[in-house]
Image 1 (cartoon, rainbow, N blue to C red):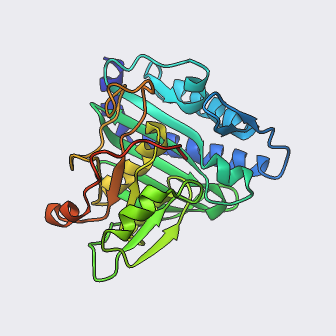
Image 2: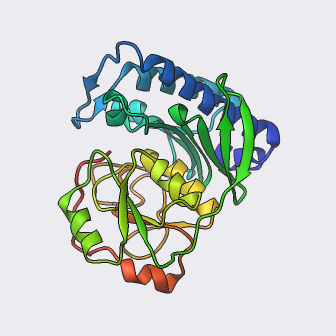
Length: 294
């Protein structure tokens, strides 16, 4: 199986550096395009797509074809166009070329580039690039790092990161564009000291770097929205759990077998380094339904 063979290659330094470089370069591209005509259109599900989404995805797909020839790729804009790779072997890339498109269109800076590699349902590699924060986050072989980026996209610093244990004060992160009443109710009913709005997959990265404690998502998301950030969080000692308390799994219909959306996530909560007993106090209601995704 091509994907499984690539899993061994994934841990080579040259492969890691190549994946980091394409994600950073894609981030530089969408940052440059942010000042021009965004050419905003609407997809079939009503979500926005811009010229930057499409250009960044083309760049990433071309690079992955060289870095990992033959390995299946599930990429957001390709799926929107009906192009879904064969992931029957369960080892594949998940790509969101521009997560937080609404933030991007609105002139805000909390948007990211996301590339993850999934092996047997588990995101074992992830890179999240936040172009306008001059920062990237990576996860590989159980280690998470925050990368500081220079003006030319060069990596100027690497710092190991670790999610924190819950303390007396609990900081919850919520969506900028899709904070709904159900999430507000959930937070009102649980021990949460303060809330902060953060866009895109940066929510996972803020928890992974010990800046926040949890992120509940009761509304709808897709696997390319979460896989890279989830990989970073897991490598930093955190966990993203579904209603059953088990870690999210990735792959076609992995979370919602009856859903028409082949790569939709079930509701989840992303935690820092919480014990099982601590997580048990924040269980999602069993009858929540999906909402709109970010």
